[in-house]
Amino acid sequence: MAFDLNKIREEFPLLSRKVYGKPLIYLDNAATAQKPRVVIEAIDRLYREENANIHRGVHHLSERCTELYEEARMRVVRLLGAEDRGEIVFTAGATAAINLVASSYGEMAVREGDNLVVSEMEHHSNIVPWQLLCERKGAEIRVLPFDDEGRLMIEKLPELIDERTRIVAVAQASNVLGTMPDVAEIVRVAHTKGVPVMVDGCQGVVHSAVDVKALDCDFYAFSSHKLYGPTGVGVLYGKREWLEQMPPYMGGGDMVSRVSFGGTTYAELPLKFEAGTANYIDAIGLGEAIKWLEDFNREELVAWENELRVAAEAKLSEIEGLTIYGRTPEKCSIVSFNIEGVHNYDLGMILDKLGIAVRTGAHCADPVMDHFGIRGTCRASFSFYNTMDEVDALVAGVRRAVQMLK
Image (cartoon, rainbow, N blue to C red; front, side):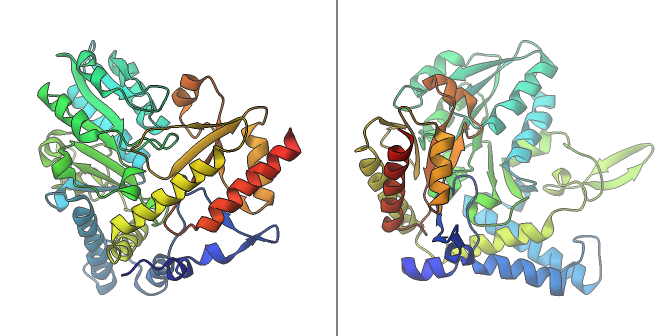
């Protein structure tokens, strides 16, 4: 499908609404993206016409939902370039996926005195699960730093890894800085030391093509709701060799082969890690979002997002006292900034009254804020459905806010 911005915007019902009497300008896509009509209608249709619990059922509706659920899984297989369906686990989100690895892999592999390497630019979801693991096991977290431009200092990785390093955890793209580090090089360095790598792909999968086999990462997590799908569902990719070794994360229905009080045998992958009734409706919704995206040239979409980001950075930089955090060439469409003498919350509230939705605060990345000695930023994050006029409106809104607050 050719890139037609007006037609694309028509696919997203929420973009046509008004806020405080003004047309909505939605620039909070790094937090969650809006949903195309096909996803909304698919979920509505499923609940109205086809809803029934998946697997185990022999009646028509159950078999139909099971078929759609497994079709969605195969769409994720193709999206990520995975080997097969057994490597794709549906979870409640990226946070749940990372916690699964930290708990299950961590229980199997980490011992007292071991260490884990986590980058300084991580979202809390790729920090706290590892901290909890280290507290349980008596292990240590080592931090891979970034510099003041937002560049992850990969050259320091070899000195952080030793014979007791059990995993490296890194984001494919920072949700604050927009930085997209060379994850393939991180994986290469870690693997030369025999250390697996967990990649938080929440922003990366949205703003780049992903091939987990080429990347050679061991684990990869992302959330549906940032990829134009429903909330409450996400994905864990894991190499089969790891998933087969790891113990189940949770126990319950659907993850077992047979249960007795004498012992339990577990289901084959991926059901081994999908205990209980899955969020099958929203997983199918994610499949619809991926199917919709398949009709586009992703390179064109990403190129437009980058045009918006570059224009926003250039125009915002003309405002006196404004600082942009994250200045590396390899960035996704995220712009985080502060203005001297203006609190980011106050700026965000004024923009909101102008119909412009941005995110303020620490963005679940306190270590990034600590690096710069700040408490938070104002963050504008762009999708391919945003326009250059919206960039101009953002800049004009920021200028107006500065006049009011300084």
